[in-house]
Amino acid sequence: MTSKAYETPTDADQALIALLRENARASTAELARRLGVSRTTVQSRIERLEARGVIAGYGVRLSAAYEQGLVRAHVLLTVTPKKADAVVRSLRALPQVRTLHSVGGSFDMIVIVESPSISDLDMLLDSIGAMEGVERTLSSIILSTRIDR
Image 1 (cartoon, one colour):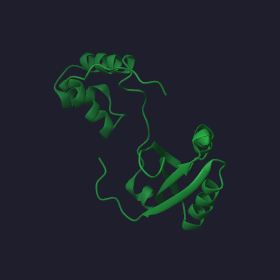
Image 2 (cartoon, helix red, strand yellow):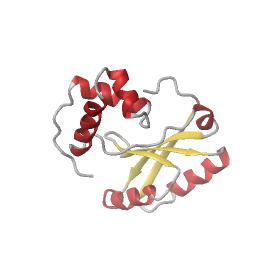
Image 3 (cartoon, helix red, strand yellow):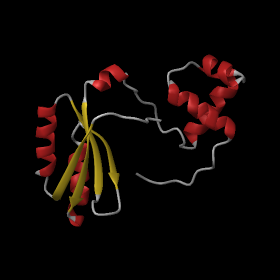
Image 4 (cartoon, helix red, strand yellow):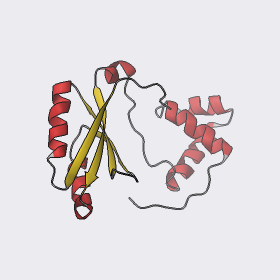
């Protein structure tokens, strides 16, 4: 992933981004009504934010009811430095991996995973631990989410 220097979005851009985070499928007319501006203003702001790379894409936000049925965990990894890229590639291939963070401290990476059941999670954790380059893992099952912004 390449990093770019971005202009700081304006307050109006931030308001538009906040609405898109709530519902990326909202119509331009709805966004314009909520922001108190014209549809063409909203459309041009979206196009500008996309062109500048501030908006890189749109995604799906799953319902709380669906997500409640999933077992999620944080998996901390210590990896062999020379094998880190291979570990990232292997993790990227697993659909249960939601997020991967590089971190400082006693671990090198934090992986957020989700599975439909504890037994599936157990198999997933075994497969992550068996990856070439993974030296050590420490897993914590997420019991509840208290804040999700």
